[in-house]
Length: 111
Ligand code: FES
Image (tube, rainbow, N blue to C red; front, side, top):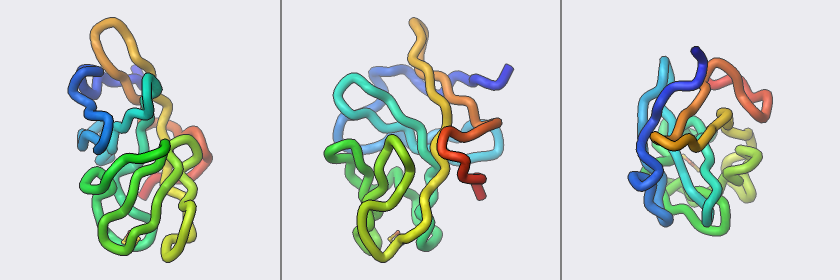
């Protein structure tokens, strides 16, 4: 079954992502208002966990050099990162938040 339980919806704060490991990947689960997103927990610029950054306006910021990544598309909204980060399908069910890391929403191959 590709969707795996990642966390409880109430575990995800509004201002920073929650780091989880699903399958082979580290994933940052983030929330924008009532919407949930799953993005690979790795900046495309260098080996920095995006879960350590802040969430704002449906983006997550990489704390090292300040690029922000759109949670919907995985694309950086500013330099120095230029490559998108993989985004994973996510479903909020009654018993928690589920993520499928066997495929990506934006066609980016997770590293
Ligand atoms: S390591 Fe993330 S922007 Fe440089």
